[in-house]
Image (cartoon, rainbow, N blue to C red):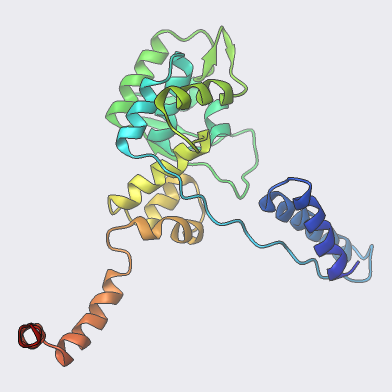
Length: 252
């Protein structure tokens, strides 16, 4: 296996219509398998497996007005509940669709998104607090529940919200919005409010802040301002504001 063969495979997969991130995941799986085979002495050594470049992070997030419009556009109660839960917890779609009432403690106001029956993975989940708006919606949903699942419909667990969510975005007049946009929105709102990046990472279930820093740091009101102030101190010594203003007036 050569670099050229790996790159050709990844390119062929992307030309067939799959996302670059999917091709990258496939090549990561191949590399992991080969490394395991080399460690087990099944093959002599692990060849190099180049990975396609990462896809740029998605920037689409909802403003507060867009979020209100989306909630108003939800005709089905379970879709509305999903949207409010996603915005209030920043959880992944799968975590919410797999969430039973037994992992929601409304007295202590805690939602445990972690599934005790599943091993921890890189896509971690967290225990998050229930804010006031979310509490009211959960109490409403709990009062009319028919199953053990939080997101339910017609007496059964919901496997997908794509169709209902898409209908809600159309009613709200929103474009480029998917269920995952809600997680991105929750993180963006926290960053814009100045919540520390390590706290956002913990809320989202990440074990470190690298992804959060890469994706959300620029939304933070204090992003790079400390570094800028250091440079400003030096520049002001060389170019005092009074002197600059005097120079401007003379030019005028």
